[in-house]
Image: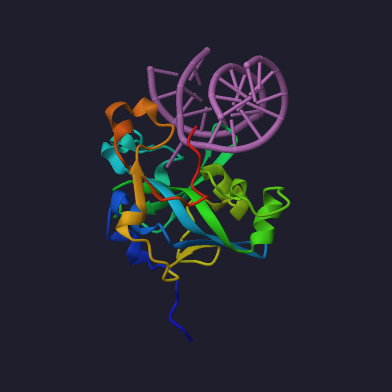
Length: 203
DNA sequence: ATGTCGATTTGCT
DNA sequence: GCAAATCGACATA
């Protein structure tokens, strides 16, 4: 038996969202939903840095039904409905009561590519399959049903397959769609792998 | 290639 | 009531 590739509970808890958002680039996000195994290499993330980040849903330690899971210890999923129709997948990081999360905005399909294309109703592999936060969830079959799941269990998890992303390959820039956050909208907390076709096109 | 607009739930005022 | 961590359809050029 080879050692498990799955990231451990402690991996998610030992850093904040800004640090882990960068370390998550090159990791592989996997799902096994309705018997279908699918997954892709994470190529774009955004960090939402807890209570002090105006763009974060848990800014000021705001607790609602939706944000409750953000206060859990790192290593859980946070899937919420955006604009009334899109599911956005996040990874809860950091320790309990520090509501950090990392949004996954783009993945390069790797496992179960045909299933991912089918879920997106696309005939063949192309960036539109999974370049964008709502598209990541669609292609992997993630919905609100997958909120607050343990990422060390067998439905949604993340693997380290040894794909190396050097610091110089990481592009840093402002987060997308958070103009309402004032000064915090300018923070360079969007991270992506340079020149990867599965990085979302910011409108 | 660029711009506008609708879909539709959640949470805040 | 209104804006939101978005996307795709459609219009115009």
